[in-house]
Image (cartoon, rainbow, N blue to C red; front, side):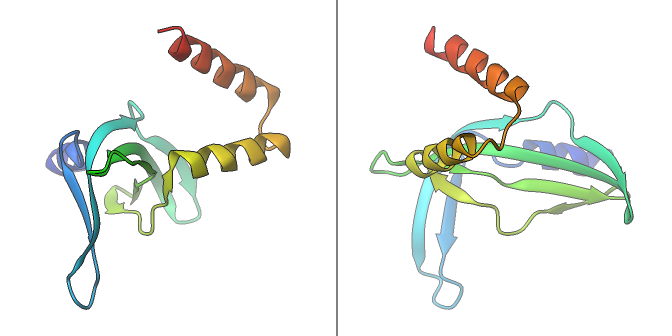
Length: 129
């Protein structure tokens, strides 16, 4: 992988940056928000597939609109044999929608007990601050 591309990708979307969605035909601004926080893995996840060596670099971005409404955005980068591309159609949820989906997934036993214990630990640490 080229070092310059990795640096640009890893620095993509930082707190304070603006995200603007525009109508493709008119160019009219549909919505915009400011990035408040970015969570990312220390290193991309690597695996082999039928397409070759792949790397997956997901992010979780907290954005805030001018009215204070917060949204969670899940963009990602993917590389096949070292060529990085931005993943298209990343989901964007309000905190309420994300929590509702997470609650429904937990109720349907999507997650292992080990995952749920780790989640409980992370919540206890965060709520104890």
